[in-house]
Image (tube, rainbow, N blue to C red; front, top):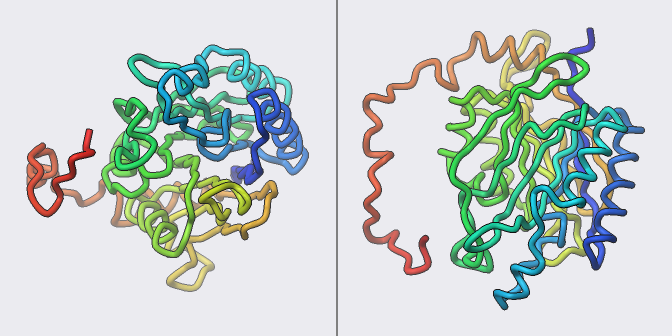
Amino acid sequence: MDQHLSIALLQVLPGASLAENCKIGREACRAAKKKGADIALFPEMWSDGYDIPKEMDTLKAKAISADSDFVCGFGRLAKELDLAIGITFLEAYAPLPRNTLVLFDRHGRRVLRYSKVHTCAFGAECRLTPGDDFYVCDLDTRMGAVQVGAMICYDREFPESARILMLEGAEVVLVPNACPMEINRLSQLRGRAYENMMAIATCNYPAGQPDCNGHSSVFDGITCAPGFAYPRETCLLETGTKPGIYMAQIDMALLRDYRKREVHGNAYRHPEKYHRLVDEAVHEPFIRNSRK
């Protein structure tokens, strides 16, 4: 059986309304299926194109339920297309909305719901409620079960995010994004994949969306493998700036073999020596008044 997992990064521009984004998103998923995708991933907060109003009543009015027809409609589409879909949205939540991804499997079942833990409290996301944990699901695909987790945008800048997902068993991590992707942020993703021996797929908005520039990417973290020169290039895909549906194939057999024999991930850690990592004290020069 073919052991390649095909991921479609939907690097597309949003519309001007929830209804328009539903229409554009459905068309993008259908196009992804025609390209052979197993998973289709949207950029961050697709429901409104990552627009966070300053006025609280407007913000709350724009937020939608995780059980809304917008979200559930992509679950029905996932079942229709036999395609896993990672849909993103501004989620209605008390006291303030959350930045959320829901992953539907190819049967239309909701298998993962994740809200951004590391909200950008120094910017517009100070008006959002952070998520409470990182989760991994058992995603049924045509090649069998794959362990899938999620981060959202700024989460990638904290090694702990990917580390927890690795410890939870993630093989593939989905990362919706809405910011300029440049060499340093791409290097963070490369590093997270390398140090945890996991594949990381990031979908950004294209140029034309404010403060975004495309450069969606997929890294598989495999630095050495039979038949490849060492060091092997771990970047399977880096898009340009233009809108499009971009495909990458992750060789799950190769990744799983690598994870069984190499030295990263949880193979040689010493967690008994890491107590300082969970110390909640924050000292200068890192004190910020905006911290939540």
